[in-house]
Image 1 (cartoon, rainbow, N blue to C red):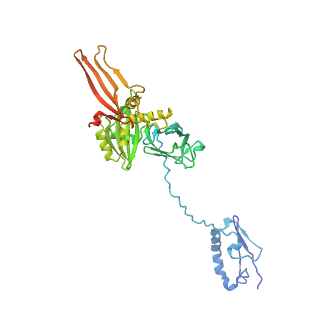
Image 2 (tube, helix red, strand yellow):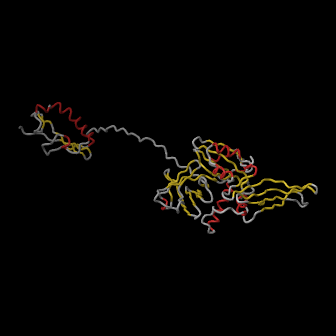
Image 3 (cartoon, rainbow, N blue to C red):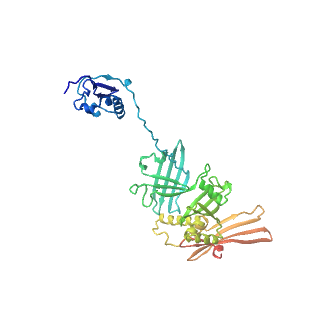
Length: 421
């Protein structure tokens, strides 16, 4: 083979070294023994060497072996990157799809209770705002005659669309807020209460306070045309039952002058699927027949309807049973109610069988109102409600307002007008 002449030229592009054979004009061949003259194509190679260089620069050769053309000499000519045209490949940048920001859950502030809560199954929750994105949850549970208890008490924050408790023991507890609901959940092996007293479950907004009125309450109040004097935290909303996807709601309103007593009770049915309210009406204890018929037609049971229309009486009956149990009677519902117990259930007055309210003026004109046990038998205690009216020396009479019948076994209270409706 003829002696090789010329030199190898080495191209440096930053840290990349490219070695190429130099064409030998005298022998008309490449200075590479592996490439014969008839394949070298001198002119062809001379014209296309710059293109090959550019291709290697673009494809990023890391070594001479990567080029496929191996040098046969140690003589090199070094060219800097500025001596060779640099072709920058066009790179199309594809922006990631825009993701809508995670919607923060609406935190419902106020007090909550479970559906059908009563004296034997009390489950209450309260959510308050402490400021600077910090909230507090307090849950108390008391269940049964033996008063099994459970609780959750912790601050929490909202971060990245998730609710996180500040207390480590509640890290597995999840909170979900819906239009009028607070849902508390956690794994079965996590315990925060005694037997049947775990604070997990669905709680319903009872009172949102005076500062904020959630949309659910606004729509509810509008459905019954609730006057402004009963809004702003003066109305409690109880979910007394759920049947066929409908919530049976009892609205109990206080007056601004006296927050300790309810002065107005109304019944509403809420269809959660349709987001629709049906106002049943204002409760008149002496005339509940029409309400019974409407609610029975909607699928609610008689017991549920009674507990709704006479919630105070039902709660007091359960208090009587709890007092009996606490006093050492293991089967509190087996004995007949005493006259005092029956009177308490019907009126709310303990340890007595009569109430007398003298509303006459200084001239002894007006009425004296009486509520008293009239008689009792093995089935019921009968309470007479009447007034002694005096409008003058020649105008005195007694006027009966109602008769109440208290079942001595079930504690149910029925008005005379209800019985004869």
